Every structure is written in structure tokens, then in C-alpha cells.
Length: 299
Image (cartoon, rainbow, N blue to C red; front, side, top):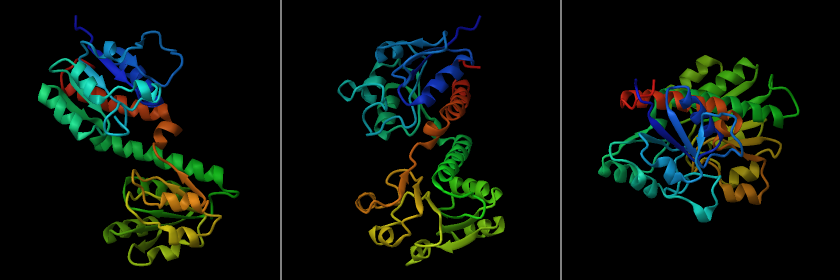
């Protein structure tokens, strides 16, 4: 009989709980520690208070997305700051030849683990996962817009900066709902794609943002680079919602936005906040594929 592998699932938000539950269905003994749940509705899931006990003799250790918020400590909101566990300590507690998985694992952790003989896989590098994750982000962003506006999406005006996965999916959802959508991007070829979808387009050049100060109900930013400075935030229609979807450092002058009381919402980690079970299930699916390729024993 094939022996079930021991997998430690550590830290994170509610997505990690979903990951743990889904991995249980894939022929694994799952030991969870530091999850953001006060109670467990899954009797087969082993909840371990001590992270090091969960790691001990594990065939694989699953870190959250992101693995760390500061590049050093495990991303684990359930544990007090004074009791935080470093990623180095986790690596040191793992068996040689075990597998370490996580989302956006710091390079220093990768180097330390590989030097010990641990196989490292960053599941967030999966294109399939990123596309599906982008859809959840886009859906969540539309939900926020719906709850923030005092009118229907249909015939409302939306501006989106960027031409990546989230922008494309966001534009597609909004267009299907009858919205008017404008895309701003540097990539001229990408703008042609959006034109064919039915969007208006703006090339990001000098003074391009002046076109976004009026006429839009919601502005979505997906570009992790400085786009909207204090001058823009002073000019933009104060009734317009600006939703920041880009990863750090984002594209907004945070200090100016707070000082000016701009109508800005921060949309970091929307999949974990909006649809944690769906997002966690996607991560678990990706993890299972990686573990199978690593011959850890998960079906």
C-alpha cells in the first residue's frame, strides 16, 4: 500500500485553510499550523499549535501566498509579531530532500533551502494559476465597484491602466455588463487588442493622465509603477473611485492620497479576501501537480 505523504501547511489567510482541506482529498496526511481559523470543520485535518512539530519529518512544506510580507518572517497573521517564525527557521527544521512550496518565496530562502538539498517550487510562477487568480481579482474589483457606485455598471464609465491579465479580464467582464471602458497602456500592440474588444484606448505618454481626471466613475490601476502623483490626485474628480490593484509598490502616491482624502481603495490580495476558498482551491490544484511531478505521492 502506498504510504500517504506528510504535508505541512503553514500560515497565511483563509486560502491556506482551503489548500489544507483540498490536499486532504488528494491522498495526503495534512498537518496545519498557524492557520487563520478559530475552529476546524474538517476532522481529518491535523491542527498543530507548534509549527516546528508540523514541519518535523514532513515530505513537503507549503507556505502561503505571499510566503513572507517582509522577506524574513512567515506570513502568518494568526501568530503575534513577538512570536513570528522566520523562513530560515522553517528551512532549518525541514528534512533534506523534502519539498518546499510557496508563493513569491524570497530569493534568500530559496538559496538557503537549495543549499540544504531541499527542492523549492514557487507555485505563483505557474501561468495557469496566475491567469485563474487574475480572474478572481477582476471579479472582486467589479464587485467593489458595484458596491461603491450609486448607479448601474451599465453605461458607467471605467478607466483601466495596464494591459496584463487582470486588465484584459476586467475589461471583458465590464464590457459584458454594458460598461464603457477606456484602457491606458504603454504597449501599442496591446492597445490594438483592446480596441478590437470595444474599448477606447489611451497611450501612456507625457501628460496622458490629464485625460483621466474627469469623466470616469471608477479608475482601476493594475500597473506596479508610479502613474498617479499628487498633481493628478489634486485634479481628479473627487466622486471617482480609484481602485489600486497593482502589487507593491503600486502606482499611486499613497501619502498624497491619504492627505487629500482621495476616494482611493486598496485592493491588495483580493482573491484571499473576496473568494478565499476558490483561490485556495486553485493553489491546491497547482501544488498537487507539483508534488506529483516531484514524486511526493499526492494523487
